[in-house]
Length: 262
Image 1 (cartoon, rainbow, N blue to C red):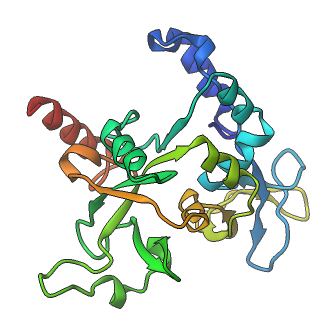
Image 2 (image 1 turned 30 degrees about the vertical axis):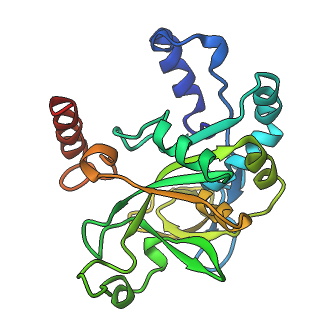
């Protein structure tokens, strides 16, 4: 799944590298949906092209996009029963997680997710919990700091089971989620826009509200899901910052250590 912003670059990159040896006919590229951005006064922003400024609607928009873009139909024609959905910014992610697949199928569940323990209470990852007897993920921006720091008798974080975007769905679960409207989360972002005089304003600080759906909000559509706790050094090497923690440098080191110790 690509966005309107990176679709052409992604396709061009894959074409230039001959899809890295993978059969082109088995690569199905589709764009996710978009939603308008609002400024701090709740008004629409206008982009440099003179149109209403929009942004991608979050990874949770994948289900509806798969339905609209014909992806689900294509998978059914190919006889695909299980779909793994992962995040491109984790270079240790297992895109064919046979252990998670075996666990989920053996328990008769339609979805499964792999987790790792949080590094610290303030690590910027969503965490699993239960709400109304259904598995739920609380995004780190929505978890109060005092609650994030609570530990059990063994000193382990109560809210320490990290959602690392390592998710498995049965085709029937995908079809079900594609017909549901997931809730929206708000993110405050920097956004360039045209002012009332038609001049481009390049924002230096967050000035616009973006609305996103998250894939983990589909969990509540199901009575049970399989949860498999992995190991950070084997499953989680994210690239979220230019430098420092969770940067290309730290991810590369984790990646190299993983293969060195295999």
